[in-house]
Image (tube, rainbow, N blue to C red; front, side):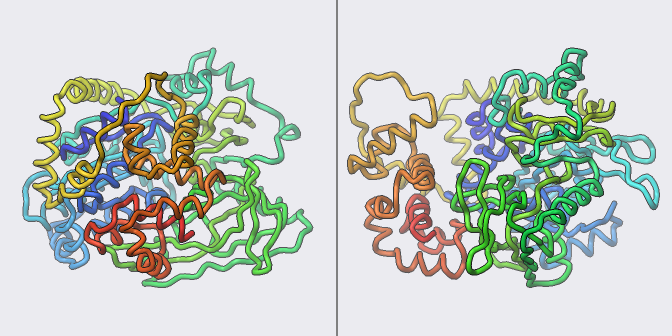
Length: 576
């Protein structure tokens, strides 16, 4: 299924399981849907199965959101206690759209408990109390952690009775009956051979596949020195990073994490934050960014090297593509209904000579040295290998038999998921636009959203001008260059959007990339300020100064539609 088709499904309010191979655009699709909802006045609850995953999506764990914490099951008394919590009530009663990311790592029991809490709080017997639920993940990746005894965890994907704990075995999943949107495009891997190899891992590696992998194995003495290593276990990671930093003879700088808020909340943030509480750096240290930059200078997983320290002792990092970034401290926050409950502040870096496979999930790496000789989980090898964009970027120290195995039940269930997705794809790709729009309107009205923003945007568009015949632009780089040419010719954002039959939001995205590439400067951006933004710019700038630039929805709501999201994106660029 294409991302655009999946988005059409989501917009109708149906419950959805969004899946696909790593790099197929699951996160991109969810981000697009979240933005679409916010433009219509709906704030979804964004959660994930683990702290690390929650940090990636700027949300909270589903355990925290639902109030179940670390419980394995809920007695009638415990359910009543959880459902009576004011914080849980505030979460659940006000949520109309619930997103749960990395659902592959969520156990069936946990999903069942979340369903119980939602039904109880909302006093509604429908699955999850009648809210739209979107489950996101890939069951070929790391499975839920299952306790075997008091001292050991074994991620074999079965509980003590040999029953699969996967979320799709929960009665809540069955009752929810989500439409499967199985994305098939590949946006991470850049060569066909490697893409085919990763696809082969999902059905079972053949002898020919093993030959390709064996061809990437090197001896320790031939390991490239300037790319990160992925290990199965923490001990190996800590050993490599500590030793590499120790033998570096440069002056060491120390950065302590600052925290504010209740201890149990800040501890949860720390578990999800990949930057350490105490970060030691030296010139020459290999580092990895641990957070997405709102300005687009780096993302979680961007690699680089510390080349200097500023007068303020801030690290200056040269990325692998040659850009130089002075890295300031940033925040990881736990928000609830627009209010910040807890926050931690640290330099968004960690040593990156080595990282664990577990912490690499969700990242994209240009290159990596991967050691899978100690792999012990289903899906561990698949997660590690799928972090890398191409076969040329892969260096292997070795792998064991478990590294190439995917869970047999995930393999069987995948067939059913694909059939379900094919049915949904056929239905929505042939659905008349008028019928789809009616479903969208019914959904938005039912959950208390507003179509005014969409109507306003539609009415503001000028009649499309006749364009000379030309070959369609297929390459994104060429598309951005076309936008640049029109902007340099003095066209406004709306005029460029109309001439190119693209949305203003897409054009603003082009502008951000052009600005980050240096093709547009702030003077150019200032010329794109709309009359409405010019009137309110000082107030917007003051809000950015006090509240940060990460979340635009609260600012949009503050101005009650006087400013568009495109205005706010332009203002953010000018305030960076």
